[in-house]
Image (cartoon, rainbow, N blue to C red; front, side, top):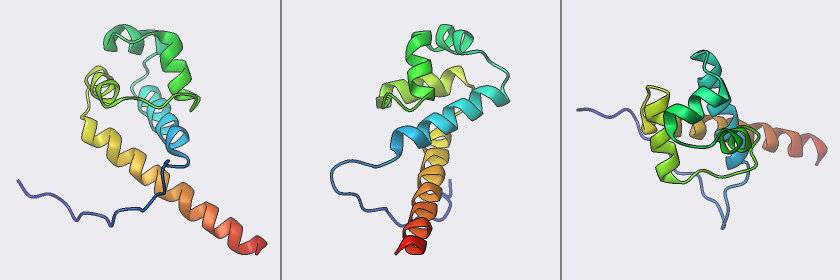
Length: 104
C-alpha cells in the first residue's frame, strides 16, 4: 500500500497552539456532513454529549482512544481525522503568520 507524500513535520515547543480549535472545526464539520446530532454521536461513540460539545468548542483535547471512538462512530478512519486536523492546523498557522507579518 503506497502512502501519499509525507508533509514536513511542524515543529512545536511544548504545546501545539490551536490544536483544540483545529480538532473542533474538523469534528463539527464531519458530524454536520453526516447529519448526526451531538447526542447521536455521543451514543454511537460511547462518549458523553457534554464531552462532544466541549470537543466541538475547542475546550478539551481528545485522547488517542477518543479519536478512534469518534472515527468509528463517524464511519471514517482515525487517520482521516488526524489528516484533516493537521491541514486545519497548518492553515491556522499560515494565516497567523500572515497576520503577524502585516502588523510587524
